[in-house]
Length: 477
View 1 (cartoon, rainbow, N blue to C red):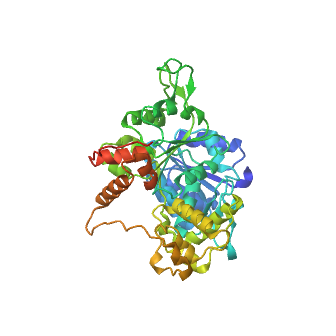
View 2 (view 1 turned 90 degrees about the vertical axis):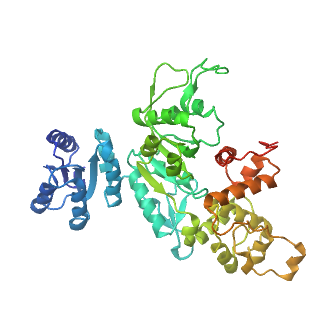
View 3 (view 1 turned 45 degrees about the horizontal axis):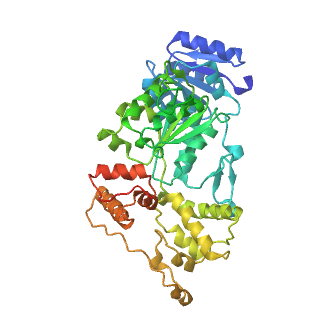
């Protein structure tokens, strides 16, 4: 490991510094010590640049934050790892955004440090290839079943930052609208982490009925309740040594949130009907399309759990903010449709332009649905403007699409526009849309939820939130 270059350990706790020095020397590193940031900079002047700097965040005279900022300027090739206690995690996350490689929460094992100093810490470069015409677009982490595709500078910066935090054990909260690819990003974090070859377990907190989520997550012992004829291992235990994804975390009942907080704090779970806790070693990633701060303010989500989950918050941009990716995504989606046996040509320039100007409230998922529809309408030919007009059109600006006379005999009528009024709040528009959809479905909540692309549970919570009682309401047939 000596080829990795000299290491400088910066910490005002001498016992910690000496322990790290001994560990790294046993691994073949040349190690120097400094008690604060100013002494570390003097080392740089006397010895020269270091390959690695492992520094505590809180120190007298010059702290780790100031040291990192200075090193980014005078020695950009130096890789900086921060050491921090839990209370300093938000500062450590900010430091990573400023260029730190990673952060380690004290106390940590030698193995955790060795993983960060490994010569090949799961880089993106070997798996990154340009695709499309003239190298347009970037395909990231090809190991994924559905690769992340983007050429958007903002999204690329986000992915680089996420790839860095993937190698830590930090809990991640991914926020974004429906259809933006939050679960795909969660899988990306898992695949880029040291746990990549361990289990990845995904749980949709909104899809599991009330009362069943607790045994699903925590498991239960035989005889814990009626019907518990044998022990069941919960999702947390199944994810042991790997990663668990808690999708739609904002839908979790308050009664379960305290148990989840215990898992994050103590790294152990209590099975339903169990007599002793079961230790687990896992990484937790949560996703949500809700405004978590609003849920906390309304008392529907625990504030302490919210901050435990958002150790590293990630905001996924909607498709309307990365429109340059639409042609790239469209070509990829059409390629997948061909692989699935659906005959389809290419998008004409006019059709691609019309699609690229769409708003797509449903983001990538809505784009996929639209292209699937257009592929079926085109009958294997190239997709042209008239095919857009034949379909529902969704959020596309169809008033600019010309339709040949030969197609007018189809008499396809566009849906009536949604009647929102100037000055309405977003909450009022959402309420009106939900009630109109429910009324159009004859009160069938399952059908209405499907049309709105939300879960039945979310729809039920919305109706309760608005204080709406619908006569003759039906769950479904």
